[in-house]
Amino acid sequence: MNLPRLSVRHLLGIRELTREDILAIFRTVRWIRDECSNQADRRTILAGRTVVNLFIEDSTRTRNSFQLAESRLGATALNVTGGGSSLSKGETLLDTVRVIEAMDIDAIVLRHSAACAPHFLASRCSSVFINAGDGRHEHPTQALLDTFTLFERWSDASRPDATGFEGKRVTIVGDIAHGRVAISNIHALTKLGARVAVCGPPTLIPRGIGDMGVEIIPTIEEAIEGSDALNMLRIQLERQKQAFVPSLAEYRHLFGLNRHRIARARRKDVIILHPGPVNRGVELDAETADSPNSVILDQVANGLIVRMAVLALLLGRRDSRTETPKEL
Ligand code: CP
Image (cartoon, rainbow, N blue to C red):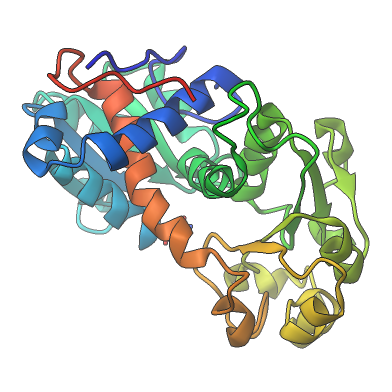
């Protein structure tokens, strides 16, 4: 196989990717899923590679899906967390990474609470870096799996020049200010040709968001009415002591999604995404989270294969026996 070449060596953010990079990732996702489905063939893609998952912040979805993706592609995966490593004894992040690199590894998947931590390391170290979420900055694989989930619904094989996002409006609802998922999604959706809007309490909408080409929608009712998809971001309970919203009950009352709100909308087929973890009863009620509009578990399933595609493109062998992914 000739895996497509990305314009970047690392996946630091969606901002650094071109539209063609994103479409090459999507094409590779479909190729791995549909044409390279044999487990033995998949395991040749990263055979002999070692990937370190360095998670200095909690994670369920991202860490576990990277680990599974690495193992299904035949890589050796090493898992390092802040608590169980010498970081807790005062070793710097850079020293920790240099120690890990001395063990002859190929790539580091990094989650860290500091914005641009992977950029800092990528400019000083030799490994390939994949950003698994850096502070409030970016969460690129989350945006890739979110937009791939929409791409599956909207792309049309009879229109190969279109992404399917043209003319579609996607509204990101909730905590935009602390949301790395929001920033990465805005970059990805804009590059794919969608109209992007945000909706939430004014304290959680950053000033200057309009400079990214984003509309601001004041109410959840207007957002439901005018959007093809809603991405319901998590209200970060750990930050609520700073009182960005008066109470979670008020947030739910003003911005929470429930079946009554969806039932009143003209658009009954609006797609509901949530990156997780979901605060059931806050961003959306349980009935909505489990409704036919919701693609939350599709996002998780797509996340695994999107991360396989990213790893394959950044680290994979380019001489596999399997066919090249076809043009979209
Ligand atoms: N969406 C997301 O990043 O979830 P985790 O924190 O569980 O990885």
